[in-house]
Length: 292
Image 1 (cartoon, one colour):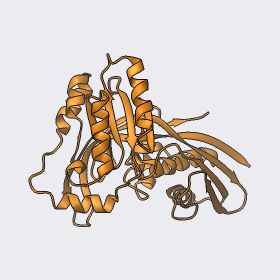
Image 2: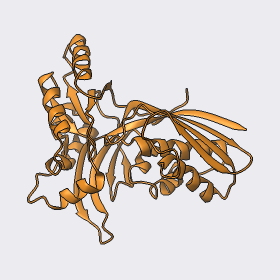
Image 3: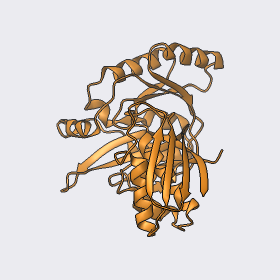
Image 4: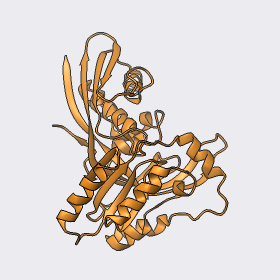
């Protein structure tokens, strides 16, 4: 029997733009993905036999073949031509329905962890090829750090680390259906697109002010979610320079000034914690996986 426990990071989209729609119905995008130091914990056990079992401490998360972590185990075993009895445990810190890649991060952790446990020998690039069949966010969540994404999110270019950012992420009880959000994107007339080129320049030159000004998300113009509107407003009222939704929602990250007193940040977290279901202070990270 072989065991591994690893932590898998969440992501935010510093910039997210939808650039078109392919004949197969998938939308193409341009985005700047960023790992943040909010981690789920994935426990893996591999032993002789076959079959997959999964347990999770978060209510409402499926613990069967509908879970991306389960699907990832199936995909890895099939790609490697291996048989094993796999047990997966999930401890959730990344909220569901948030646009933070929680399920995809778990799937990435299972792919990476089982590759190590079973000695499959896949490179990260090969794991990303397996992962994209599970979900468009999985390839980035295997790569981590800061990356420019094209295609449906699977064409990734690693970028230099972003300047330090003081972030608070907020999510209410509402979630946004990703398919519904993309349908809403299709109905937009003359939308204002995020300036991805400016964001790329800011990251490559280390220009923190330009990076903050360039944050944006096209989905904010397409969805109608009162929790998102309220989160953006409250973050701004409590001192955030910018407040932007991540993914197709419904979490919002606020970027706070570097010179804001620490006590003000702590007070903001405490205040928001009384108003929203999920509130977490965090920072960008280059480490997609941690081994405790």
